Image 1 (cartoon, rainbow, N blue to C red):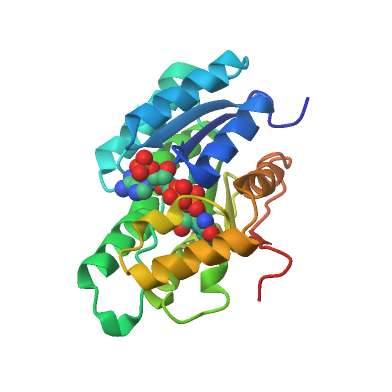
Image 2 (image 1 turned 30 degrees about the horizontal axis):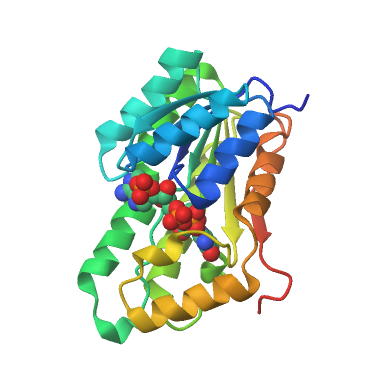
Length: 246
Ligand SMILES: NC(=O)c1ccc[n+]([C@@H]2O[C@H](COP(=O)([O-])OP(=O)(O)OC[C@H]3O[C@@H](n4cnc5c(N)ncnc54)[C@H](OP(=O)(O)O)[C@@H]3O)[C@@H](O)[C@H]2O)c1
């Protein structure tokens, strides 16, 4: 038994990597999980696997660019499990490369998914949290926003925009209703590099992930730590990176 037992948690970007690992771990700890992403087959298989292990899970096809999808994700949690305790805004892409490449489409895509996607989740969840009198927003940002490295400028900017957003929301929400947590992972072995169009940069990131990347389960444990705290305790920021990462 942990304090996670019985919580209702919606996760965006749940079809792979950190989102999937978080879904599995929280479900194992007794949370009901509501899983959003675009790849339906991956979602269906994950939901089935969690259920086969005795967990409670539903899937909800979600493109975070579509506000109505986030409304359905949050609404699905409330309809199926009675409320929403936690929204993990985890969906993200990394179309990284030097700014000089002028990948305007890639910049827009990152701003849309990494920032607007989180805003869409907040817009859907906040009214429910206010109505309930409690709620917790967890977002996956990145160490890319803490140590700015070449090729990651725009990606880092989107992540730091979310960091700023959460801090602003926290300052506006000191009535005790809302908790916010920004989780900053370093290199984690996931499918994130698939979204990188620049071949050379993709190879480099894949190399780094393979050499030093930690397992997504490590980030899931950090998220679980934030989620399991009592309602009067807010874990604002967690940085979790490979011990050998510079
Ligand atoms: N891996 C790392 O080293 C690392 C480090 C720091 C931060 N992060 C952050 O961690 C988060 C999770 O990434 P990951 O590393 O676990 O990579 P991943 O395995 O590629 O997972 C990304 C997830 O985001 C979802 N996604 C992408 N675009 C979406 C959209 N428009 N609508 C809904 N879902 C969308 C993907 O699902 P679908 O394609 O099925 O929609 C997938 O489930 C991201 O925010 C990433 O920036 C990762």
